[in-house]
Length: 248
Length: 306
Image (cartoon, rainbow over all chains, first blue to last red; front, side, top):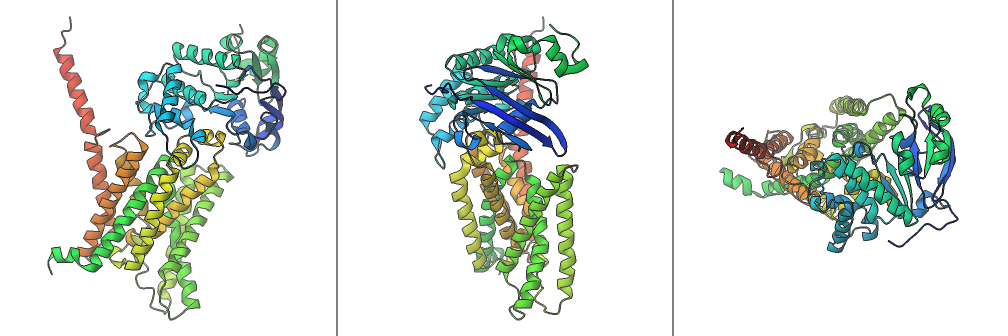
């Protein structure tokens, strides 16, 4: 682990991004800047456009207007500096790969086109699996892992990429307590190394404990800033409307 | 002539070589198609080829009225029509409001319907060269010539080379497109390459297996292979072997019984391999489950309850 995001440029910034599925706007005029070396939670009700935000940033969806910048550049110019953890449910877990194979995927870019995965790559992948406490499951086909274990494999895959910006879609959804702890500790360690993470998060109770900053979303940016500033009753009411009855 | 001599006759060997090569290419390509969850796309590509074949035949018979029919020209027409079918499906899907399976069904039946209409036109034409054109629908392996084997060998060797080079990139694209994009891989280009290979295999297999059933040769062998291994490399290899075995079985049957529809025999052979794999597969076969359950039952019975 060596590289760090340089201070001046934001790892991820949105400039007036609007996204629509056919003719329904999903995100409207989104603008924000994520400071380097912070953990940001993306919070909002179902259908607020949280996953859409990440997918659009990664070029999987095309915005209607606006654009994203990574470290002051376009997505295509920064490959290798970004790591992505998809929603666990978006992946085919019957795919014929082992936990170790999945972690190795994070190294494909370093291995290079056309070249096979070698033992030194597997060794590196094994180290990452050990970091997340999954070393004993390396040879398992991935459907034979629990939800929390699958999420840890994804985390290990993100780690081997040695990226500076981590984008994660609900890594804490449906995982066990131990996995949640592992993921949060790992995120904190990455932040202390100067890296940046943006994480879609659904548990309002833990947002302030786990994250420095919050991007509160409901089809547009409701509030953005430090967790304390954002997680107020007023903002949450704006984002969730009548759907959220209990506020802590 | 007894059966033994029939199998080793020169013509038969040509047919066997052709079908075996086709089975290998389809088994390899089909593995990625299955992993990409695009099994039905193979069906669209196969069916959509028919109008292309017919139009190519018509155009060629106008340009060169005395030349009979030209296989390369018809295969080219089939490829173009298949590509059009895929593009039509993509476009319809992006229009929205149409579920993906409905889009596939609409495109493949419309193109096939159009193909049948055009075939009727061809049939009514006075050239007489249209004989055998219907073999494209159900396949006639006995029609494979040595020049076709050369074409099939080229496609098979190309398939083996490309899939060896791109196994890791294609696997990544099939498993997690998002990560592939983040890592800077040109996902669209990789996808296009894979679909091009699928079209090539479909069109090359049209003559032997027929465009109705070519999808079976693409999908059944990799599905069978899945019961024997949990790693991509072995899955591809096993699928290639299963494809070769099924296709060769069809080739042999076609050589022994000339009127037999080769494609149908190949599909039935592939299905038998699938049933065998479901029951006895060394990784996910039913007998493993049965054995594990019996062991559990035994243990439960012999564990004192109090």
